[in-house]
Amino acid sequence: MPRELSGEGPGAPVGEATPASAARTAFLSLVEAELDRAYAKHGRDPWGRHEFFAILKEELDEAWDEIRADSPSEALFAEVVQVVAVCLRYVETGDRYRGGHPDSLFAGAST
Image 1 (cartoon, rainbow, N blue to C red):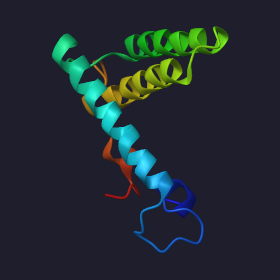
Image 2: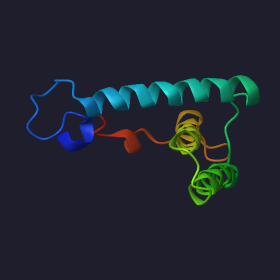
Image 3: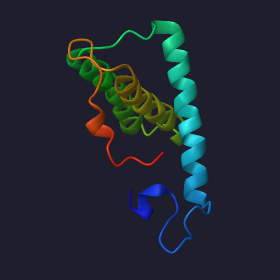
């Protein structure tokens, strides 16, 4: 992963925390909490592609509504967290009709 995308930023020593990496960690914690709430409420059954798209579109439409309404940043941020949680859920649970996602999709991902 390029350093700019890893949260380390250009010129930062590898592994050194930056404000970007701290924000990423905090954001991902919010996404995980949202995903845990969704699993508790709706279960962990996999979605098909069409279900995933429909739910993702609903969340994106809600984010777009917040943008058009010129809502406070917190309202849009909450919708963005939900958008990412929907995507992560699809990655974690696989596809109802096609099974889990191939390991090759995750090749090169850092752990």
